[in-house]
Image (cartoon, each protein chain N blue to C red):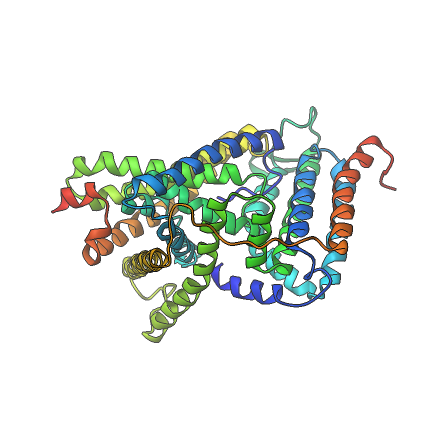
Length: 275
Length: 213
């Protein structure tokens, strides 16, 4: 995962109308959309709301000038656990339906229910929409801007300082782990090589883990001392300059929030309905 | 084990967030007061290290790969379960906001499962087992195993309460999978602690040093 950090940051450094929006409005709109889609009750309403949200996300992705392949790659990385939970849904009865209709019977008495398939698809829509907004947000916003944006939105100074330190050193350790991996490879060590005893492979990896822990601890000590020398104390915090929102930011913010709030309400009241 | 968005309804997710925030506040206080100085920067940098440790792919006997959680390791070495809460919260924020691994609305639940449960179970089982074994390594092994296993069971229970995964099957599948992965977590925790204990005994928290010397 840490290797993808460099790639994600590279995409975030591109220029486009979406990239240049203020981080604050992007954070607010993405979070609002995610909360809205999660808040929609487990019902077929989710399809319409999800479709509108997804189109909104896709339009923004198009405007960002990033390739759909990047989106697909990032999506593939986070799908497994969610998909495991979704795929197995079709075999269970859940509490959100009263009656269950069997549509297929498999050996060992396993049954597939029509309602459960519907429930699985509802979960899938919600899952895909929320993940898509996160992918959009982090692919179009630099981590430093995200951090400062969160700070300007009111994230307490304790958190911005700590998160800022962590984010900075993520890149340092990203390089470090790459080097460690390369040195293991140079010595012809492959943790997935089945000709080596399993215990031996685990032991070597455990030493790598321990070394990484010590190295990051020592980096922490050095950083802490360096910060002390520069006057770090209880009141220290990350400096975040004031930055007014541009008119375009306001336009995007109001449009995005309106969409995130109005869509579920309109679909719920039946004003917007599929077909 | 990262629960994605939509698998826990908003009201329950909010409740988990509130509980998680209490533990986050306590862990911030720990980093300020209980560590020798105000060593917040050190723990923040260490969180980046744990993130890197989670990136190491570890082979699992039947062919796939897994990775460490590291909650027990952090809690044992730094001598407080709050170390794990602190570190894992940061890791989960980055995973959730930058990668989409683990949802935003459910981040509170994920922080409870991996940071709070992982850290507290790992730390206190280690504490309880060290005098029993008179040796820190088997204690670290079991602590690592338990931290992952119990966290997985709690995750299954939360999903069952949310109504998005049946309890028995959740406990069985999550439990079984993590019982196996936990052996690796435990093993690596024990060996990593051996290495840290040998190379930098000064950074290990008290109880371990006292027993093994």
